[in-house]
Image (cartoon, rainbow, N blue to C red; front, side, top):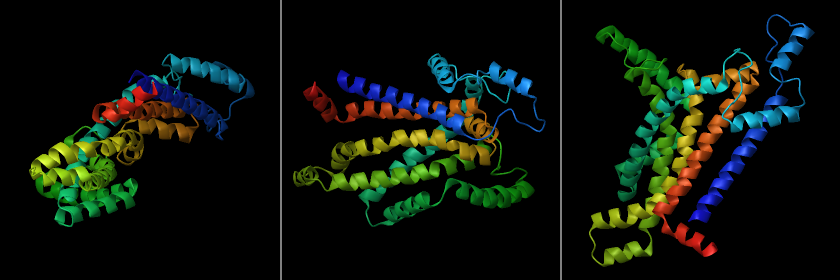
Length: 320
């Protein structure tokens, strides 16, 4: 078990190092200059600014200093907003992104598993048809397209009617803080994840239901309830948990599109701002932060495997 944990942890550290390295050098290859604005700067002023942020040093020196700072939790300072630490900017914005992601996952995970289970247990029925329709829509419709459609029909048309008749907007199209403002962005962010969870849950249960030990359990006369809860669901969890790590990470990393559309002050706002203004530090810091979340989520999923599937522990012990 310890060898398995150490191996996965080592892979995670290696992945983060590669991510930080690639991100750093890609940021320096992007065209544009963060200090070129409406008013051109003199060579002496530009040289002083470059020296202040260490951009006058060779790239490998900048890389070594950046790695040293990252190891101490320092993601540098914004090149556009003077005196603003990237770490502090992300710390202030992340609660909004996390709130959005957690609410969308709270909607997507239980709903998706419920629909997927019912679709598998009642194959060919209304539940199955509903699951297939949701899966097709969730896979085929991009989040920004769905956001535009719902913003117009629910956020403008329907909300204008509720405002005129009841005195409030049912579905505000921007901002964050009230329950009404959270409905549309949480639903849109969670819809594609909902479709993926339904698809994986349904296919996993159908695959397990066709195994020989399930037929043996039925031949022994076990009740349908015991077969479902003790055999089918338990043995169907591993494939479902496999996708939960990437889905959780995708909710956090993919939320910047929804944050931009609905004007939510999350981390995605700074990532887009960094790209538009060539703010290397903000862009690199946001990317590294999201990378840590993705790698961390996958590591937690790997640890959950040992709890659900004892074969992983046995295989690791045999290797040791």
